[in-house]
Length: 189
Image (tube, rainbow, N blue to C red; front, side, top):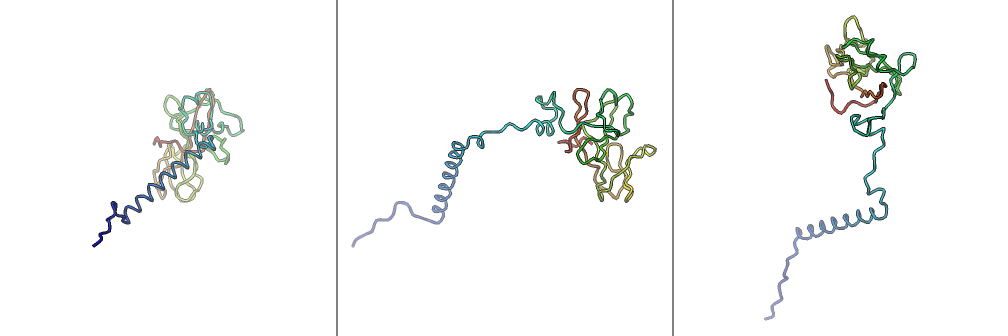
């Protein structure tokens, strides 16, 4: 009787899947290397543009002399200088400024010292999107649509809104104030 030799390795569905996975990974790795050789500009890490870098990370050392975003302007459209603004402000009283592309007012938050906070308040009610007004006599923002109220830093005091007012990043450099239409990476409230 002749006996047929048994295969040394038995082929199972699992081993076929494993071989397929190994081929897939090897092919993908070789493809990535080939792409890097053909188009080295896509493989190399690109230097982010200064506007993006300084908008996202204003304290970065490369941003020491760069003012990201748009320069804050007063109601007449004139740029605001830090040394001219601070002596006329009261801590806790937001200061309305313009400058962002949507032409909507942004409120600078004045801290004790006085100093300008690294964030500004966008006066858009988080309930239904109405523009809120700063009422100095009440020391709060009030929504004219449904009565939501927010403190001088944009935190909710009374509903129906249940989220604080949105923020914009504020950067001060070389006696200038820059507004970036992006919330700070960490909400300081």
